[in-house]
Image 1 (cartoon, rainbow, N blue to C red):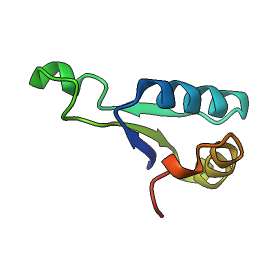
Image 2: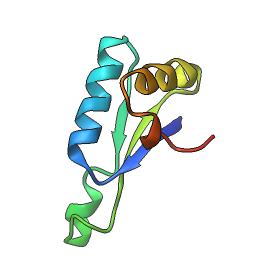
Image 3: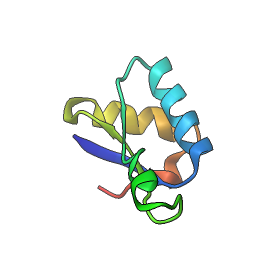
Length: 74
């Protein structure tokens, strides 16, 4: 699995998920419950993940949607 976006911004994650869903690219959110375990919402950034085979298509879709600056470096 490859991390495409790592952020604490829920709006960015929701938009990115919607973009990938429209492109029929399955994605997964990691670390959603970590902030609950450590008692804060600030320390743990959430990760938007895709499988390796979908990474290039997902990057293209997210860049076209204006999220290019949010993408993790290769």
